[in-house]
Image 1 (cartoon, one colour):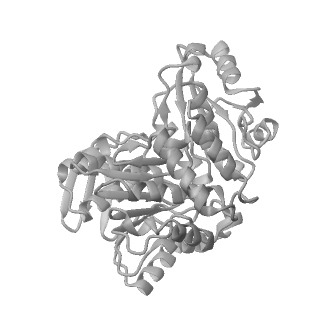
Image 2: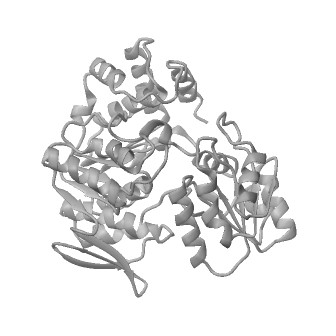
Amino acid sequence: MSGGSDAILDRMMALHPKIIDLTLDRMWRLLDALGNPQDRLPPVIHIAGTNGKGSTQAMIRAGLEAAGKRVHAYTSPHLARFHERIRLAGELISESDLMAVLDECYAANDGADITYFEITTCAALLAMSRVEADYTLLEVGLGGRLDATNVIENPALTIITPVSIDHEQFLGDTLGKIAGEKAGIIKRGVPCVVGPQPDEAMDVIEAQANRLGAPLIAHGQHWHAYEERGRLVFQDETGLVDLPLPNLPGAHQIQNAGAALAALRHLQMGEAACEAAVSNAFWPARMQRLKEGPLIEAAPEAELWLEGGHNAAAGQALAAHLATLPERPTHLVCGMLNTKDISGYLTPMAPHVKSLTAVSIPGEANTLPAEETAGHATRAGIQAGTAGSVAEAVATIAATAPHARILICGSLYLAGAVLRENG
């Protein structure tokens, strides 16, 4: 267990009463006290967007590593343990290294106001500045413009994955406003890869890129990615690549792969790197098939999947994926946060599922109570009930439908709880 770092992380939680408070002032102050590690990172690829950031990052990392590059990666939130957020030259940060940088940041902060995400991002930047690597992949936590990761003056490349409505209370209630926050990572003269966007979002991204003289590498203009005869075809201004379909399931992964391939080709990586990007990426809780553990023992003949997507766009992508799977009764076990568009997430899935068993997310203050999730599901046209835990829900479904497809979904926090308990 990671007792030492857990204790320090708990102390960090108390440094600022609000979990989310978007401003960069506290970041600049602490980074300055730490000697500005953000200026000593290997070339940075900075990734923003509403959906697909993690998958796109995983594919770029797989491609770069296949080309023999050492890659740092920063992502959030973690699922089972905090260490997952920080990867140093390919390896998850060790407990001793994590404790050391957390302690150093805590001391340098000297009790001042700072959010948990900000101080842990400083710790990640500090750790990555001290280990040699060829690239740094930085995933935005929330938004972009005022996100704690937006402290890199001159990245090698920025990427904006598809923008949709999410986190309206922080980022604005229109696609244009949200796109404006995501476009805040665009830097003067730095190329920006852009995934497929609604017109309203694309207009804002293009305007910001024009203001800053940042060349765009945009889906539909400079690159295309599509499925043809069971293969992924990627085309850009330098030619065409014919590749296997992404190993991360779901039609939406074709466009995530497209953004990753556009980035790799901009970095002049060869075809082997492109093939590895689509074949070797692993990203937990994105239609992850569970193969072992107590949940499998409780439902040995069922097919168990784990999916962490949690907004309306994720619900649409998941519904589209369910429609392509072999015929099998599909039952959802769902827990969601009370800040999400529950109906927007559940409604697209209604035609593809037999039932939904709602659970409250264990240990999560902002969980939507199971009864409310079940109510939303009923209104969306899904037969719904509740259970006291994921294990209870899985056992109950397996008792009446032993060969079912059981999909645990609705939140990365629920997915993390499942991975911890089923490990």
